Image (cartoon, one colour):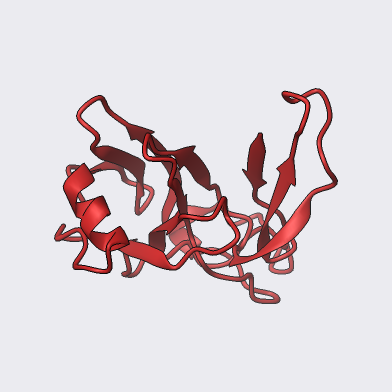
Length: 163
C-alpha cells in the first residue's frame, strides 16, 4: 500500500505498508512541493497514479488572502502558502517520478481540497473548492489522459469545470 500526505515541511510525504496496512514506514519527503494543502491520490484502472495537489511551497510570514481566513489569525501563523496553481500529475513508476501533468487552475484565489475518482467509463472526475466560493467539477476523458501519457496533447479543458 502507498499513502501520500500533506505536511508543514514544504513537501508532500509518503509512506508504504507491506503488510496490508498493519504497519507503515516512517513518512519520507517526496520531491513534490506542497504548502500543507490537501491532496488526493488515486490509482487509475490502468495502474497509473494520479495526484491532485498545489505544487507550491509556504513562504515565511505569508498568510492567506484577507478575505479567505479570519482576521484573528496571527501573521506568523505557519499554515500554508499559495493554493494556486492546482495541478493533476501522473506517475507511471509508483510515484518515483511525476513527468506528466495537467494544470486545472492557475489564477488568483484559492483552488484547494481536491478529490479524485475514476468512473466506470474511465473518465477522471476532479472536484475542488473554487476560490472558497463554490465547488468546481472537472471531467477528463480517459482518452485524453492516455494521449498525455503517450506524449501527445492533453486535456483541452477551460481551466475549471462546472461550479
